[in-house]
Amino acid sequence: MDMTKPITLVVGGPAVGPGDVPVLCARLGELHAEGATEVVCDVGGVTEPDLTAVEALARLRLTARRLGCRIRIRHPTPLLHRLLAQTGLAEALGEPEEREPALGVEERVQTDDPAP
Image 1 (cartoon, one colour):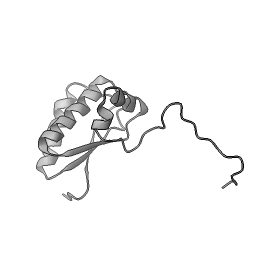
Image 2 (tube, rainbow, N blue to C red; image 1 turned 135 degrees about the vertical axis):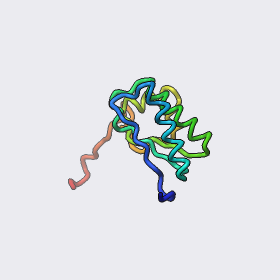
Image 3 (cartoon, rainbow, N blue to C red; image 1 turned 120 degrees about the vertical axis):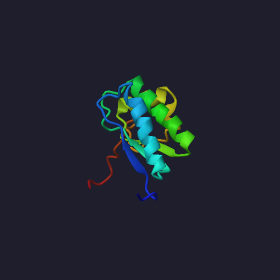
Image 4 (spheres, rainbow, N blue to C red; image 1 turned 135 degrees about the horizontal axis):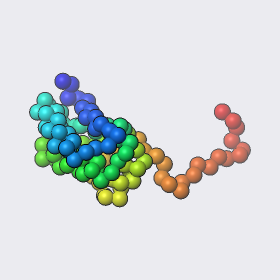
């Protein structure tokens, strides 16, 4: 296993159930035992996020911290990102690699710019 690159842990979906939490934490422990020091949780498949998904990510973060491992999330849906932000976990899990623009922010186009 190449430890120079982060290892990806896919968190399946569309929802995360309470029984998934210990399984995900155990898998993180296995990845760490194999030498992983940085794990990226791909949560793109979690299309119906709720507080159980937030709890799962919080527990994964605690598990990673206990193991001395770094954890980040990738591909959160806008709803999951909002839930993480509202619970204060977005920052704790690292800035998501891909996210939607902030609500209320609009791009403006300058009319004097030449067309591409």
